[in-house]
Image 1 (cartoon, one colour):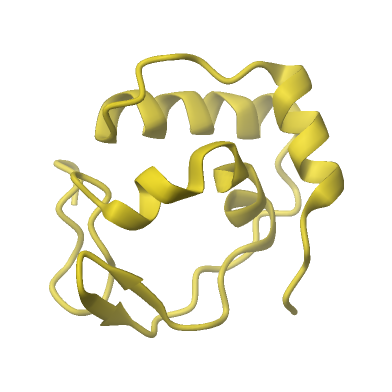
Image 2: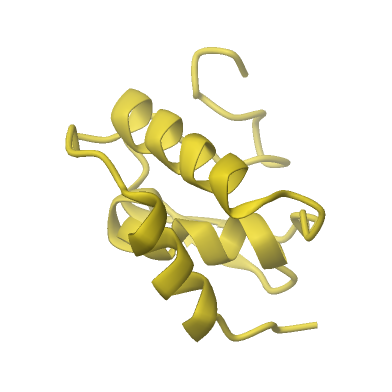
Length: 95
């Protein structure tokens, strides 16, 4: 999993993931609120829930977004703290 390839049918990959590419800045919402519903990544359905991380600060979420997006996508631009704050205000919590 350190290489971003996920874990078989349990955890989706980050490396080359169409789902991650499509999230963009809204990755911050996924980090904060988790995912409860099945998702499709590169044509494969994943049903394992991702827990919420409500205890993380906006700065920590910004750092995680920047790491994930720069490491596992073609997006080499950085997300600012202000962008994350704005996105987090619009998140829909699916709990």
